[in-house]
Length: 225
Image 1 (tube, rainbow, N blue to C red):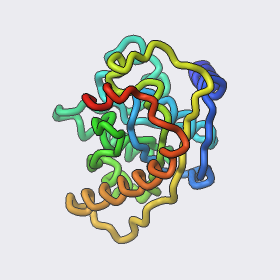
Image 2 (tube, rainbow, N blue to C red; image 1 turned 90 degrees about the vertical axis):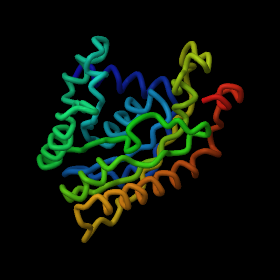
Image 3 (cartoon, rainbow, N blue to C red; image 1 turned 45 degrees about the horizontal axis):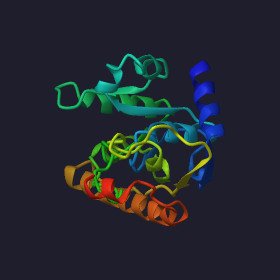
Image 4 (cartoon, helix red, strand yellow; image 1 turned 120 degrees about the horizontal axis):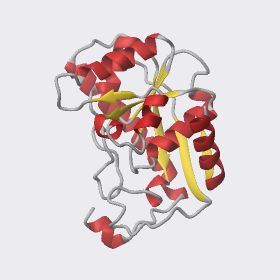
């Protein structure tokens, strides 16, 4: 609770938020919120959005973060789900996420699996995890567009000469409506098609936000990102 209060208060006061479509986040019951990934700040931004909707987020986080002593205690204390990528135990993360959805919890996920490497911050193709969770659990799969975080903590931030986080920067979020997954089969072909549809929805939401906040990263850095 202490960690939550500190993080939420800091995010609320340090940034200027514009969140649209929050009514699309269910007030109770299972749900999967899928965000684009353009910055290392995104997990905190997504957590803030979910908290503002009155829900507690459960994230799927790579095991390297659980090995980082600076933040591992936060991840474990808030019951985030460890993903041991590239190991035989990797599928356990999906099972744990499905169990959480079965208990009516909310999963927040970045379907791309990592911060986008696209120089213009366009979303990359989705991994299959989000689609598999939604199809198997029946939980609503909700696309979410996030913009502005790359001005604060972008990928390879040292190259962008980021030294501190100026206050009152704009962070924009637009929550879409759930995808219609009725009648979809639990097959690899359907997972990929659903992932493509999900990312198309996220791309549309993100594109609508981009004009409001310029990409402040240096052109030189963007050309080699």
